[in-house]
Amino acid sequence: MNISTTNDFSLEALRSGDRAEFARLVDTFSTPIYRLGLKMLGNAQDAEDILQNTFLNALTHLPDFEGRSSVSTWLYRIAANEALMLIRKRKPNVNIEDIQPEDADDVPLPETFVDWSVLPEKELLSSEGKKAIEVAVKKLPESLRMVFILRDVEDLSIKETAEILNLTEVNVKTRLLRARMALREQLSSYYAERTRRKETQ
Image (cartoon, rainbow, N blue to C red; front, side, top):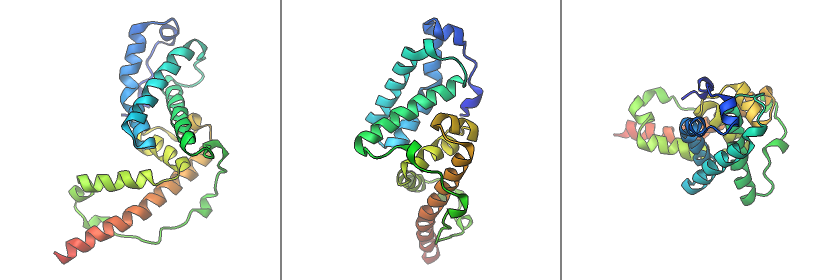
């Protein structure tokens, strides 16, 4: 779901405490926000906490929301902050805004390349393949993982991702490139092994 197209909410109704409008907001964004929490923390209970806290915070701060960004961007920003707060509790030194942007020229090229086209699509999308992708995403550093999830999993634009994480668009593009390259490196090893298995059968 591309949430960029789901911003047809009445801000006036939300601010005035319209329960039906807020319920519609919750129905629309519960799944993507839960998914964001689950992919960032890897724990269903943590994802539930992020989901609940996101909407509690939204309800509390709706009267102060000026509408400078879309409702979806605003909600994702709250959810991202909730996720980062949980991460900081476990790793106190992690702060996505403190990580300096890297030059795209510094992105290391993967050491392992494999032609995945030799594998049928059902191999790439098998339960084992999906599991390998999930594991690879979890291994990304937090600063790269959040950008990758928002842009490539939730299908937000570069601009929206930058607004949510308080980063420049250039920084988002650089981190996204690094995330994709890191994932390709990890998954190349997995699919290289899968390819070898096919060749020996």
